[in-house]
Image (cartoon, rainbow, N blue to C red; front, side, top):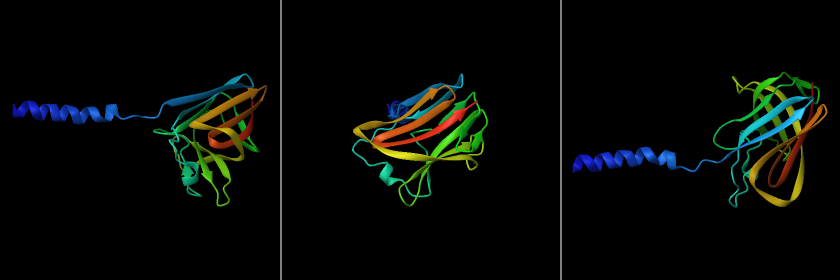
Length: 161
């Protein structure tokens, strides 16, 4: 009987991680300059918290939950004057001391290496968005990336070729 209760205890402990509630994954996708651009990301919920307010200025924020946010592009992208070759990159965002935000496009293999920084234009949305959302839009060779969470929205533009 003792062996059985030990076995049940061990199986219960092994099952706990499987029962943990992970944030759902989201995917934003657009066709820009005839090529696919996509972002895979975790979608945490606010649950009454001010998560963006908790961000520490100067510290990269992972932009999502549970795993890295990944940008994959079949096109060469240009943010401002910085060219990002086609491929896969890890995305983070960094808040500055004045409350502004910058999108950081990082080498996927070496996440400490920033390939490009793109300023994010901030705006406010009327209806609060409970789950973190990334949206990509493409029209001809121009694209926009928008992140929305709570009543905050952050947007940057890029071109593709």
